[in-house]
Image (tube, rainbow, N blue to C red; front, side):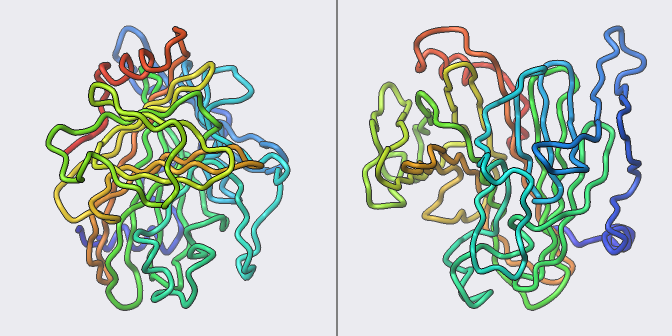
Length: 344
């Protein structure tokens, strides 16, 4: 854990990160001395009824950030109308009332404090999620290669969430560095938990570790057996169950979502420590009809946080167009590619 520096704390109080300036409809050239002059642009847009959103683009891929609901709502190839992330379209333009006891499932990418079993002791109820972590409006500031999102301080956990969303300047890669900053209240043990809701895939794959500390390489976190579960040559795969909730966990650092047109690899930053849910670094949840989505989730190690402490974790998303008919071959190909996933 790192202490929150005084200058950073001052910036948090002002709800602005250091050394950042808003870029609305401008392009930031990140390699001015290089021959290719690669760039990332950050543009303010209206997105499906939400004003003051941000489109981050690098010429290959685009990410859409919606501060009004604290979400990264979409990751897609450049110029495409849709992408890999699932969005609950009937909720376009709506907002979540902080005092509501009802959870509104907008879709997209978000983070919660893990383990979920600690929510009730901290906030007095086990559902819905802690309010500052889920669906509440956040402050947003454009940065050199993306957007920084800054939440309010959650009243139950005393934690402020700062998410740095950026695109690589030369690759079809998005990175989200999520910080939990403990600013108030008694100490609490938490893990950074990132949840990405995605369209129903043709298949999801996890490469199992040969030296896995999880028996069998994976554990079932919901009783129901995942649909189409199989393991072949060290690669676990499954599909969405149409009528049952399913969830498995693994200490694999990577997951691959293979859609009909896109392939997305999600990499979790690794590190030493005790992980939630029996040692899980990654988890896959599938939702039954009528909402046909899946969740690919990453977790960091548990940390006992006191006021002034900070923890962070980076999740890396690589998105490419699908090039073949065999989903397993697509998964193995993207897993074999070298990407900077910030594994420690």
